[in-house]
Length: 283
Image 1 (tube, rainbow, N blue to C red):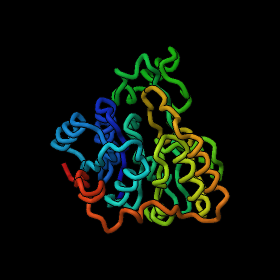
Image 2 (image 1 turned 120 degrees about the vertical axis):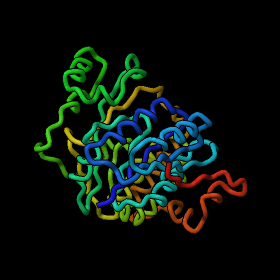
Image 3 (image 1 turned 60 degrees about the vertical axis):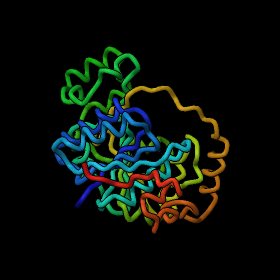
Image 4 (image 1 turned 90 degrees about the vertical axis):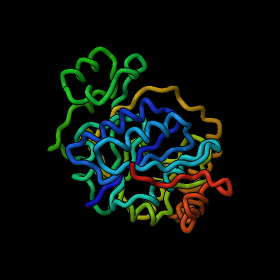
């Protein structure tokens, strides 16, 4: 089964490089990597050009003009470009373990989406923590014992540990998720009504549940390491809460503004007449 990894980013090239390096070093290489870029500047473009020259799976840069928080839209643009039957979503500041893609695929199951777990890398070590640190359990244990990593139970990989299946809403995080592309298309993707941080992942999951999917998760597989950053300001959280409540109250599983808004438009038209959208390019 072909798998596409979608990496979301915005003006954090140092962290993004660590994530891409880790994805280039998987035990099961992804069939492609798409960087879903919500308007980063020149440094990220230069990084993508640099990484595109390295040996590895096809690397695609899906970019849109910076017009504020439009995470849902850039995710949908990446979904439209993705060639894989299965999609893995990870944030550009979350370093995956070397088994990340293999674990996601081993746990992929029709009728479910997968909610991955994350260990948290604190502020003191975030700048120097990278993929090499994830290769040594002794190193990870030392960092956990010294307070450098929290949610530390996730540093252990136990493949035979049973996964859970549920329909719960707690702990929904788009920084590490997996789903079949057909299921994303069925619910019309992510909701473009979200134009500020907060609840966009939860609203998406509500609609997946309405569509009939269940949630699958595993505490010791498909783990990533989230690098510390300052928390985003919840400037429009009240509006986002309303959107979430509307999704909960409605029987519909498709949002009104999502993937369908983008279909039929060339990448150059994604950002309107300015023609600043890049679309997907192999490195």
